[in-house]
Image (cartoon, rainbow, N blue to C red; front, side, top):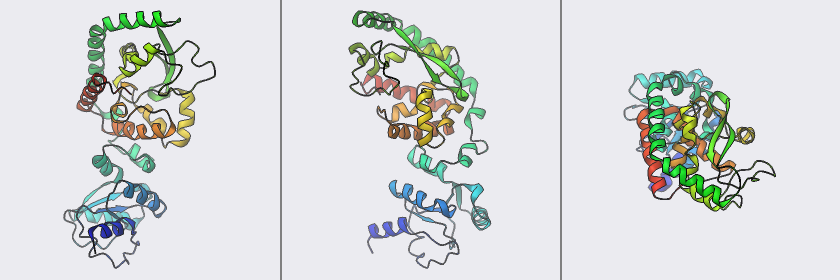
Length: 325
């Protein structure tokens, strides 16, 4: 049997709860094999996600004899039956690595598969970072970076304001209601990049080659200069330098119907830049929002001071190389 055919069998077989499947000796010795324990109702969706990410696995298999170097993952621990829970506890005491499936996949993929999101994962003790992270460090970074950027970018503010006024009638700045921490709305500040009557036909996402965007607007969007006024929101405590990008409530109402736990992003302050912005290209659709949500949830679960610093450095690289999103 070839390695490819073996991998295919591993990713498509599901073992019965009583361990009656006899095709185990060859399979359980495969390197990097992931053992997953989950309610039967979630087997299909978990298999689809693992197959898509090319993770070799077996599901609900109980005939393991040697636990050394084995990784066992669980999904929805509150819904596991007694057999599954007891098996995992015994496996951990025998030397197996036992961890939540989404935590394990997060380490391998550096994002969270939103199709598998569930309340246990989001509310797991000691994992709600907004309540445990050193918030004074984040606030110090926010205020320090905002003051530094405001000082350094003052000439850019003046040139941008002049360019906007020369190209099109209307104000230099505009305010727009966005949803932030704990679902509280606030007014976000930006340099105006569209014509004054851009939403005369109602709210809609901006897109590439959007006819409503002015020539100056196209440039300041690509270089993210249009985001500079949000430093004022940071100083006011409504935003952070780094966090999920704030969205408009009119769009959130639609997105939360299609994206699992979309409002969980509001457990942290929104950011001027964020992990989704440096990891994912520009997008203006539900599918794009889904992909960005993967990175936003990962950020919320793993946020720390040094992650914020890395995101800031990546943002600088994107701006300098003209890869604005």
